[in-house]
Image 1 (cartoon, rainbow, N blue to C red):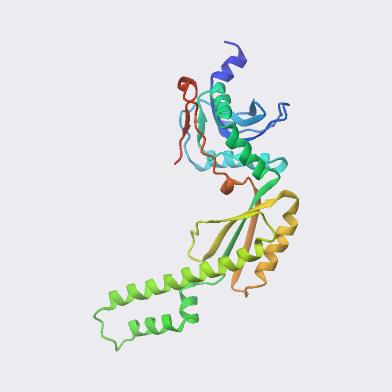
Image 2 (cartoon, one colour):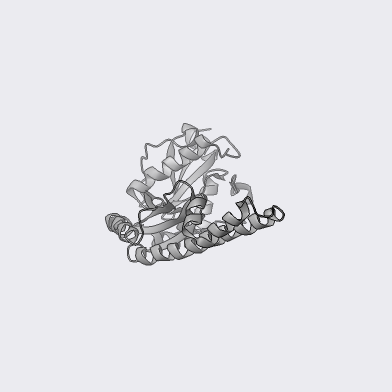
Length: 271
């Protein structure tokens, strides 16, 4: 078997999709397992891939870091539609068929996202203890806590009271998150194309936002973050990152062609 046929027959890790100008790029990148990264083109579309001998990819730190490093480098120079970690096609023909079967959706996404990148913004409470901060700034919480821990109070029923107090704290914090997020978004919509609220994972986080920004407007976006921050006092910390590939704005639901199932299996190893 020739070298080209051998490469074509191997499974492919897919990192990103983008438009093709018909000229095969020399990425000089290494992907998972240090495999060279290269392009597979079909009808004006391109998949950025590397070869793999694995049927499934382990979502460990090394593999995810390698995947993200490829995406970061690609995003520096052009617009790409990032694929989630772990997408594998059986061989080169499967990649070509995938591009062909989904070309309308891919082109629509590329048209919407071309020339744009994702910027992340996290706003957090910059306090030592968020619960104590809420107790200090909400008299109803302070009163409830003091009643529970009053040495002279009846000790019966403390468990239920603590649960009610905890629920009140969470509801107050949730309401603040909604109000403060809306305040920031109202400012940033003048500086970006779209905003997606992503999951808040830390107790001190007020919001996590993904912002779609034109590549040549990144400095202007930074000004928008500064404008939004002026609406807040010093207990709030604004931290923005990027540019990244527009992960949170890609909603592609890729499907494999049904006529050639033997060569078009695409698998996602991470749910």
